[in-house]
Length: 247
Image (cartoon, rainbow, N blue to C red):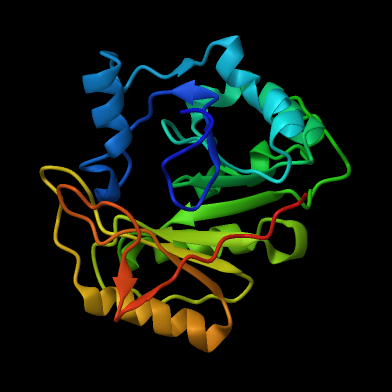
């Protein structure tokens, strides 16, 4: 949850909170829950704001590592209702650090529109900035099965800079037929851990081919399993596209 993230598609991971609530099948074997409960000894369902040093870390990173890609939040969900009390503070940090590229991934796209900095007088955020959308912020949704591809439709209606929307098909739990209109980047990956569910490589090939056909950036993170390890090739080729740096 800090600088030098092990996640292949970002440089740093930034957590404004620790803890989350399960919302769909992709959450069943959540790596964050395992980390928080087993490594940190905390109740994952008790969402708490991170300490100041962690919460304010991007202010340091902007000077030390301009151009870094920052994943928010690896141990929670940025648009979780429980984060409402401090989301305005988080937006302020993001606004003040345009040297960084923020990758905000959620399973709750229905909460995005009402919790953007553009929402003047919104009782949830009480934060307004007429300059939104910001070119250093990408918004994404998780889609683990075709049932949840509808999340993409919700995000498609949210204003972003230059169609900077992305989708993460991880853990990939089935064959997906994606409408990539207004999307620029796709991530795929198998589930990791002791109870990892099976991923069929044909599901991965299908996503790869859809991205190729649509001219969409594509990043395949891992095949999954107990020890997924480093870069994973698809038919002998590694796909490691990431958003361009704002540096």
